[in-house]
Image (tube, rainbow, N blue to C red; front, side, top):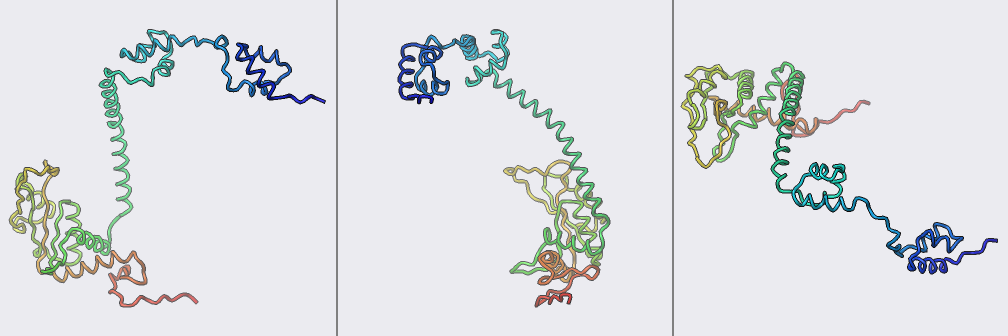
Length: 308
């Protein structure tokens, strides 16, 4: 039968031997038999004697590297002077502040890297953007008259004049700076029977722009003659305003006004309302029936007939 080891006795003896300057190997030989695990537990918390500690061969290099770093040397310069790896230099001095002389170099290097990156990345993103737009445009195909009516009514409800108290004026007036949206709205007006002679145009533009050139631009967009254009509305320049819409691409806004258009204004309100509420449900809102236009607003929800 194996005798039970008195752990407390082993701990006391091991601590005393350690304090007497004995090494771990010597203590184990003196207390034999004792396992490594038991000895580790017994020596825990008691520091080894100084003579058993092994000196770090690179302690002197580490101190020298830190001193050179405080003098302003780079990692490469320190590694070359001490003949050590750059990774070792980084490990020794990375907690020290970076020398001021590298701030400008690193910032310039970073900015140059960003310039090179974005010069290439912008081309990639622009190509991806153009492909996405082209694919989406191809999905649309030709628009039917009904689809033009929906698009035109929603565009007007975003950019056109509405009936507001106290005047409650009902007249179709559409203002926008996008030539494509202007063309769409003119196509919409033609689809609902608006006559060209009922349309008037007015350019709204800052006084610092070329007003005559802007009017010629909008004449080309609309295909209308100069007789259909009224006097331009000039916005006076405010020196405190930092305007972004400047340069040759700036042509101001075009205002399209339709004479005798109160009935058309009311129809647009109905079409836009139906288009906006149709997505909320078929049973409780205005419904858009393909090929039949918009149904009137229902006072009561339609009853749903389920198959028997």
